[in-house]
Amino acid sequence: MTSHEQRLRDLKRLRQVRDRIDRDYAQPLDVEALAAGAHMSAGHLSREFKIAFGESPYGYLMTRRIERAMSLLRRGDLSVTEVCFAVGCSSLGTFSTRFTELVGISPSAYRKSAADATEGIPSCVAKQVTRPIRNREARRAPRS
Image (cartoon, rainbow, N blue to C red; front, side, top):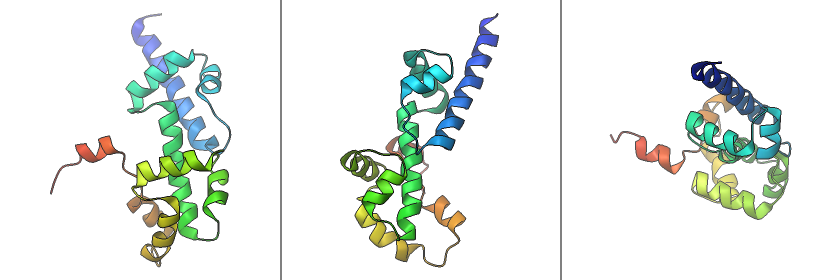
């Protein structure tokens, strides 16, 4: 097998890992389990995933969880703790810290402000305009 063929095989596996994270974000996932499912070592998966998608598998998983949490918080019918566990986080402290890093405000502050800010907007539009922007993405954005 040539290195080009190996690279294509790895990219296919990486897409499958990303798809699994997208699908099973609320399940307990760790890099070792994801790597085993992709027939790669955890270190190789982490390195290759970051090269391919710009962030680690864990970072990608947490971004998916926070995006879903934002949607649940906008609905307003669940507490922050309920949302934390609904998206697969097992620690309210870690969830709140990560949420604040990605969104810029705490989950409780987001819950209070988001319901009013997105009232009357279709959920598909609200999801797009409220998507968290990581710091490295914000630096790349062109200034207007």
